[in-house]
Image 1: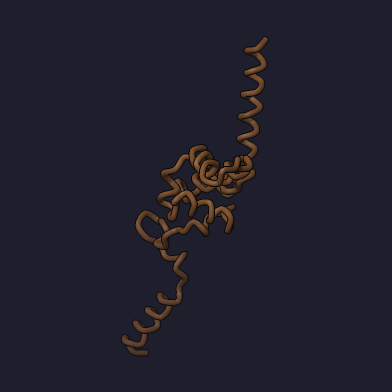
Image 2: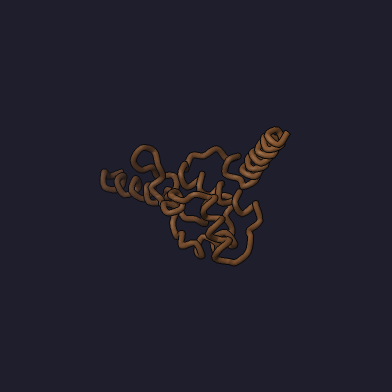
Length: 130
C-alpha cells in the first residue's frame, strides 16, 4: 500500500471519531455544553432559564440558585415549588463543575440537602425559644 493511501485511511478514521471523544486542552471536551445537556434539565426548566435571561452554561455558572428562584417568583407572580430551587442548585453545580459526581447532578440530591438544612434550622429555632 502506498504512503498516500495510508495517510488517507488515517485521516478518514480521525474524521469518523465522534466529537465527544476528542479532547481539547487539559482533557476537557472540545464541545461546548448547552443548557439542555445538563442532567435534570427539561423543557420547563429551559423555559425558566429563558425567562431569567440565562442562555448559556457559562451564564448559569455565575448565578445564585436562591436568587434565581426569587427572581422567577417575581417574574411569574407565583411562588415556585421548592423542587425548582433544588433543580436550580443541581444545574448551577453542574455548570460550575463539569466533572460533578452523577449523584450531585440530580435534583433530589439537592432536595435532601435542603430538607436537612431546614430541619437543622427548625431544631435550632426551637432550642432558642425555650
